[in-house]
Image (cartoon, rainbow, N blue to C red):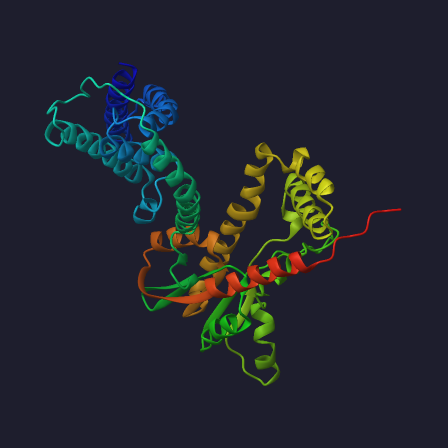
Length: 408
């Protein structure tokens, strides 16, 4: 009796959640007020049923796996971000509507399976003896232990890739070979804008090839790079300590790359720094950046107590991070956009090789100016095979490192 009630309760609450989600997302997509509170309450009720439902499914055939496991999977997938569906939607309301529509389709499929794919031919679960089945329980347990971590790790990779794709508007791309930086070209009335999403680490040869393509007369490159003229940070963040174990290099500055050309008399392209100085940031952002530097140094020194102490400071907590992101991302975006708008009348081509996270906002403004994308290309920044080899070396070194002798 309990199994039947639990199963039917989950079926109907899942379907109700799907229906409310579709209504809420459709209303928001059309610019109307939604029913977020009611939707959230029903969704929470569904989530709370997942664990007991999965446990009971492993104990008895009273809950048909082909009916309930897809629903459990959809519920977990949706609550974990519905990756990689987000890669295919620019509008967040359209994305949410697509996810809720998928949930509604899964609910409909479950009811149809019960009605036409089971002996009971009913829209609800029939009465069942619900006997405990040891072999079923063992199969579920072993399958969960073996496949669970693999599926979770795989989904985590997909979710990270989806988040990066959404956050950068596709200027950072992932495939089976590795991580790619995306370059897009825009044109309007004889003027060109090249936006190059950067991740600032990788192979030195990759960046040299990218920068070499910037040559050509009547071209300006707007260089990224926050300065610290007043020495507010005290010292630079120790990036090299983070990336050297991965076997990669830090990106060369654009101006440094073209220094030899200047010496030989080659004028083009012009390079202009178009970034802020730390003196333009708020004190909260300075404190955050100082804390990050201290945490990285402490981690490198294996002083994990110091790392914990630093990250627990008020300056490093979530309420402060929003303001930090406004400085590090939004204010810098507006600054480079001003430089870009100022430069366009004077140059036929302006190139913006900035971090991929900045290119989302920059590309939105550029297309808003009437520029149309004409082409794009990818640059392989990091290969999975190289990263795996580096991680393998790190694991070997940590195992071979002799244990420290106890203090006398």
